[in-house]
Image (cartoon, rainbow, N blue to C red; front, top):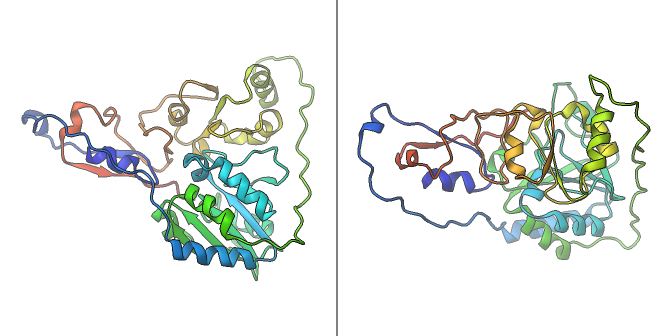
Length: 325
């Protein structure tokens, strides 16, 4: 039960089961005791108010909505906050979930992957509001300043680890959905602010008749023809994300699942349930609780789900180490 509670607490993720060699020879301690534990933590009200005041003072804000938003059920709250803020909305680099409709006029796609690339994308903005996202996810290493001069960062996350490793900015820990729902009413936006012009999305083009090996355009063309608009897409081919955006943009909550850098192949498929279309799927020995991320740096022994008899051991240990770039 301890392991299950740890796995289901924010930021939610895999756990590692370590069983002593002689444990299998010992009698069970008795029937399992089932407990119910809250899975959402409210933010500090005073700190959230301070964040809201700083957001209200920003002249040119930029919003980054990361995977935690969709995972916490904050899809609609994120849209409402972005539309009130009238700011461009970026997603995380190599996201395991997409938290904002990619065809929305405010959507700008994922953040660049390098320090220098992020710096360039943030030029001209005085405040970055990173909600449910790492600050920032970099890969590979390309040297540069983390932020342009005059740019500040506010981070809201349910993951204390992501708060600890952020190289810049101030952080608030708590449910990102609760924060978004409250920030909509807490912030003031200048009446003179206008929303940025929509970006131009790539248009699907004609593809050549399918022949082995299939190109990315051919694969996504086929998926587009059979996939319902609200069906989940599980993608473990991060090198074809541009083609996915062209053919199958994410427009609904709980409809995109992936593993960062596709390093934990197959784990995202279990997160999405059966209502999915899969690109480049494979199997793995990693187990994750529903709607949890299976980070690529976490190694799990395939000892079964936490309700199995092996859970009677008291030697569970948390292994919720997020992916690090």
